[in-house]
Amino acid sequence: MKDVNSDRLNTTLAKQYNFDVKALLKKASELTKANFSPLLQSSIVMFLTFVVMGVIAQSFITVNGDGSYVIEHQSIIEIVAICLVSPLITGLYMAGVKHARGESTTVFSVFAYFPLLFLVALTQLINSILVQLGVVLLILPGVYFYLASSFSLMLVADRKLTPISAIILSCRVFNAYWKQMLGIFGVFFLLFATVPLTFGLSLIWVLPFYFSTMGLIYEELVGEQGANVITSGSDVKESNFNA
Image (cartoon, rainbow, N blue to C red; front, side, top):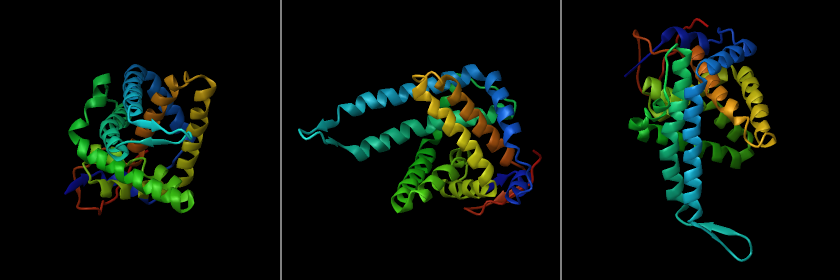
């Protein structure tokens, strides 16, 4: 049984929230500036984790004479990577949520969700499978699942929902404001496109800004856990919310 904030979810899913993309990005920028140091340090931790995993993975790659390559134990490597990265990404998302709630974090906050490793890793694995299946089908379904599942890790960490419940609710929240969310993701597509042009330097701002924005959107659309509304299973009851 899970408690949820009835006010915010009902308002969000009823499409009564005034989703102002420009105002939200402005507020996210202010939050990023105010919490830049812990966000940057946490982003560096995640980046270094990717680098280390990449170096280790190279030892399992065999290059054939025709230029093709084979990755030994690929499935095991992918599972290990998901188990290591998912809690870190969750920690960064939740740092953005906490900043939106006026709470402070440190670089060590990024490790706070390793106790939920199984749940967040399973959530990320299901998301990855759905995205890959969607891409195989017609590409667009894969893009949809990638975007629509953006809140799932936060829902697992913040609301203690099951992976399936979190993914379903994340899709419902995304569907309620898909046009505005596409606008948000469009902005970040352009921002991440600057990374190769700046030799990676723009990541110093873009990554903290991204996690601040996603955390703020989650707080605005979902909000803190309520005390009066109870849900069970995948039937997550919605709620009202003051933007």
